[in-house]
Length: 351
Length: 79
Image 1: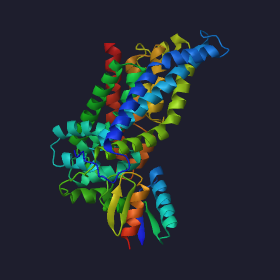
Image 2: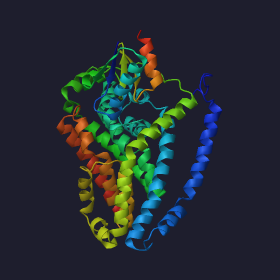
Image 3: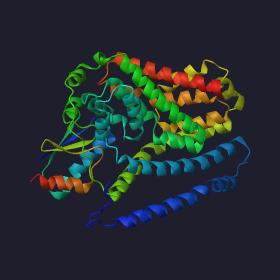
Image 4: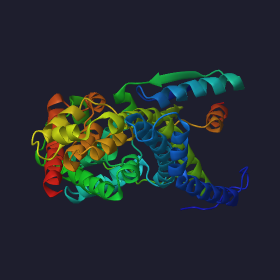
């Protein structure tokens, strides 16, 4: 890490550090006032606080600013952290790893490496062409969208830290095991032809040299991530919390317990099946998850639904079709889907 | 001069193309901005994150929308 700042910069490094500190303190002060502010706002409206509409409105007014604030904070911090984890570094770390260790490392790197599904293909090729085994590459591709800071922080803020920890642990486990299984199946032949040609000519890439960035540069990258990610997901959050508020206010309690309760054995596969065509990201699905849990849906079923929505999305499969054959995509969905099913049943059994 | 923007169908790729065109017009530099959307070609440049920018067949930037200052730098360099 280099901490020097070039003298030509408009604002000196200490101003950035100070500004960040002040912002964080302000953030904390405002965050603590959100609940009373939401109650006060609801009280101003001409509706009964304890009616279904009152419940829905109070839920919406409290959760929306809370989620947006949590998300902004964490996206900025992760933007800074990620400036140390370029995809090229991930590749250098994974190249030449054995399966097993490689799967674990790949799943872990998936959490911190910047990932966007529009870059999934060049990333995939980059890894495979550097000699990273197919199964290890899959561990990365499964973990990157599923176990990310947006999902974790929203679970932490809306549902509770226990569920966030459980999701983190089992998300990584699914990525590791699914990748390992796909590696064992030796499906290199099921890549698209042009990718296979690159794969067979795989060579170790030259040593990776990280860019020299000052701390201020990293703050700037954090701000870029903040603007970009929050700009992209706020609409999903709005929709998700709106849905959540409706469920919260209007859906009768026993209905959810009956459909998504632990007693209904078919609820877990149904939740996974419904989740695949649904295209939203963690930001949109978690407010719904909160409302479902609140209405008596079983934890395992709800987690399965959430993982399926985030990890198995139709648009991403269409993107991956450029590099994977349909057979390989089917195996991918099958293996990951089974993992999610297992987690769902396990949790319904345990809790 | 010619500047290539690598990336298929991402919002940031379009933003990058527009940014380079705008900055070049403002600076009065004749620039041909080429969008490369074919995955094989993109991968051929060895980039793992899009959008990426190629000037004179060299990858000068990847993974994000570049800043105006960076774009100006490439434009001046190309002379």
